[in-house]
Every structure is written in structure tokens, then in C-alpha cells.
Amino acid sequence: MKRILIALGLLILTIGLTACILFLVYVNPFMQKMKIVTTIKYDPQLTLVLGGGGNTGILVSDSAVLVIDTKMNEAADSLSKTVHALAGTKPIIVVNTHIHTDHTGGNKFYEGQTIIAGGNYDRDFWVKECGDKGVPTVWVKDSLILKIGDETVTILNLPWSAHTQSDVFVYLQNRKMLFGGDVILNRQSPAIFDRYKGNGYGYLKAFDYVEQRFDINKVVPGHGDVGGIEVINNFKDFFIDMKVAALDPAKKKELLDKYKDWNQVPFLMSPAAAEGYFEKHPQP
Image 1: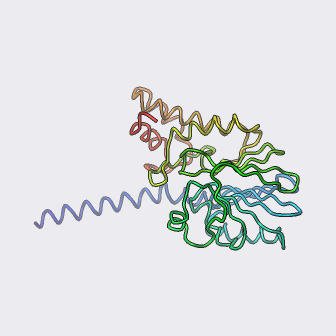
Image 2: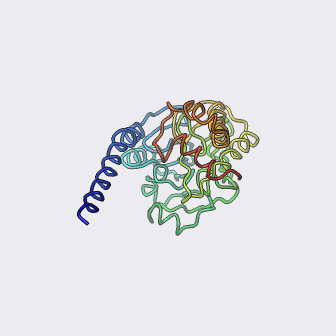
Image 3: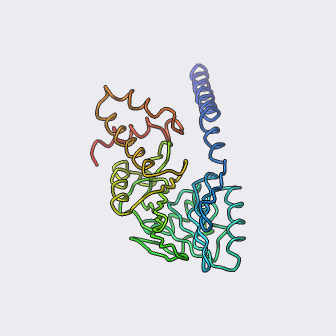
């Protein structure tokens, strides 16, 4: 019995040390990088606030202010102060691209305003994940078109699961700009979690879907730098490569190494994790 207890203690210690090393080497740097906030004045009406959680867009008009994703923690608080100062007495319309709290953590600062999210969630699931402050007031099942000043804004709920069960794209028609949420990332590995019905094949369908539906010049990913249509195409290549790696072991190492410099967390958000999804799900 004593030997068993010693062995068990050593095992627990090893697991704990491994977890600490992984946190210090991968998770903590990832989180610190996520906290960095960069503000870009794209044009007189549109400001992009990158980092501090998911990337955010603020579109200001004479009649309303549109906010795309509300960030997390201190960045969410700072963003809300900026938005309220810009809005004054004008109404604020918030769009959440999906349910994860790095994109919805600031919803609580917009109580009493319109908050829009994908309609494949239900209220109980949202409250369980995000709390009961800043729960969406409008659930979009298909699409919704808004006029914000001279801009036509299309809010499109993806009709199948990709990053989550209800991912939303936001398209600014005059600017030919797409906000992709976490269905589109720039040089960052995705998280594909069963809890949110993550689906690698859903990502692949989504890339073609939005390119066919919208005329896109600028892409604001959920995380990473703003770019052109190449941001979508590069992320599409990632998923195609991970699918090939799962089907052809001879190419696996080469294809995983191709993305080793992408922002990632081992076992959770990494090329290997995405490849593992396709290995586990060889068919859609």
C-alpha cells in the first residue's frame, strides 16, 4: 500500500509539474499576447480595436453606434467607456460573433441596449456560459440588415456549426469589410471543442460560403491582424492541410511543421489538435 501511495504521489506531482510547465511556456504567453490592445482609426466613422480578447469594430453614425464584439476583462471595461463616450445619447447596437467570453465579456456594460447574437443558441445555454448580464435581446437565425449612417451592415448567422453552433459574420457593404469572428483567424490555430459543436468541415464550408456571398476586400479576423482576402484563403489552406495530414501519415509532420510559428496552445489550439479532429472524424 505504501508503494502504491508513493507511486500515486509521484504521478500527481509529475502531472502537476507538467501542467505548470505548459502554463508557463505556452498558456501564459498566449494570454499575455491576447491582452495587448491596438487601436486603428480605419476611417472617420470606423475604429478597429484589436486584441484584449476578440477583435472589435466600432461604427459611429449620427443615429447609432454599432459595436462588433465586446472583449474581456480590463479591455472590455476600457472599450465600453470609449463606446459610451462616442455614443452620448445615441443608441448602441452590439453584435456578438459567437458566445465565447473573450468576445462577450463586455456585454454587461451595455445593459438596456440592443445586443444581437446567433439564433442557434438558446438563452439558458448563453446564461450558463456567460452569466445573466448582457444577454442578447435579438437572436438572428438567418440574416439581418441594418442601416448605420450610410453603411449597410449584414449580420449573417452561419447555418451550420463551425467554431460554435451559431457563428455570426458581420459585413460592411460600402467598405467591403468582413468581420469573421473565430471562424476566421489570422496566423492562429483554432479551437474546435465538442461542447460548442465545433466542426472542422463546417469551417471549410464557411470559407467558400462567405466568399461567394460577399465582395470582400478587407477581413477582420476574430484574432490576429487585419488583412485582405488572403486571410481567409490562408486559414482555408490550414484546414485543408490538417485534413490531408489526418488522412496521409507520411505528410503529417511536414504539414504540422508548416504552421509551427502560428499562435497556439498545445493540445487545445494547435495544428496537432486540428489534425486530431479530422483523424477522429474522417467523414463530415
